[in-house]
Image (tube, rainbow, N blue to C red; front, side, top):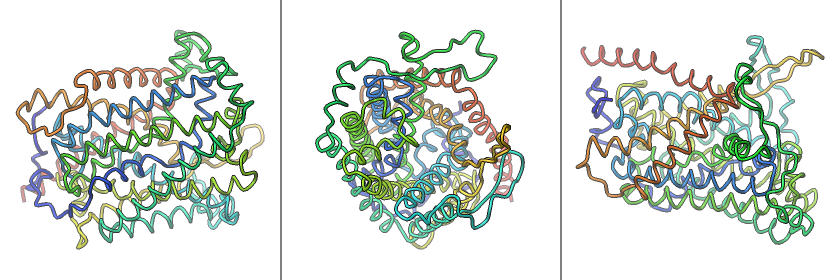
Length: 519
């Protein structure tokens, strides 16, 4: 681990830049970026899968409590780093400063390749999918360009649904090139709207849709198990020494169920760190970023927990486990409002995904900007346009997210010969959930590293509960990662491969930057 402040390969550093950013984000704006980036479509869907894994009302709620504690603990810890280094790039900067430029690059590489762009693609397709509920012509099976096989496993296509997703990405990307003021206005309006919509869902489920039979069934035996899903080791070679379990198998089985279920809930609560990417545009970053991280994550986690109480107030656990397409929120509103409930939920998710996509698009380009300023990305990405935003970073991000929307997975049913198409971004996001946890653990570990390496650095905010809270996060997240290695093996090692592919890319970029600077 080298104590370097920049890669030393160019004359321009993200630390010494004469920043052209406009510091136009106040505390409310910053909090809206945290909340808006977190709330997408996951909370309306993933509870079904968590209920299948945990198999009980108590297990479902406890899984969300674990997610909440982890997320808020991480946010409270990140606040120290954000206040210490309030620069564009956020987590990329923290990893670079705590360890070395390589670690910062590996995060930025994975963020660009999959984490940020894949999530943008997923959220954009989610928007168009629910627009299809309101307007059936927006169909995944109405082809503009039918699937073209690229190999046995992959294809490319353009459906009407995909086209709408592409147009959404294009629209929000262009808007965000027009300046921070417009981007934050969209964020504030849509985040406020979807927060109120989620609160409305909660109130409707708890009070209007209150089902006495469901409440009796769900809460009379809160830890009674109902058909918990069998969880098998993630690879055949593991089966000789890693047991097959269910949540009802005892303490170990429940631990495994909680660990596996965190994939959905943690991903639904992710992207809270996006505000750190925009630190160069926050008016009072040393104060406002730590507060917005704590307040934003607390707001969302509270809403998520209450949303699950609303589901359990309206639907018996068995129905949550088996609801079609895992659309738990839609089923809840259908109980209350009948068929119009599906339309109401679709409109709510459209508002939610629109705001989420805007927040992700706005924030992500700031990381690539910081990388480029360090000579570790295309030089043009490290420049701001006349509106004081990294326009080329926004364009490149939008382009790659669009490619991920177009690329499909291709699966041939061996029995029938039927070809089914999935979404490549969905597979990639499954792969990098494990890698995201690694980067979170490393970043929070960076608090300890930097306190040792730079004990006299200005720290306007110090991590709450240090060292206990950061240590507990690192231990808990590490346990979850070990569970995923053993029981989600097929989804963990590809994520590591994606990260490690960044090593030779880093070496090539660093070499090229050194050659350019020597001329």
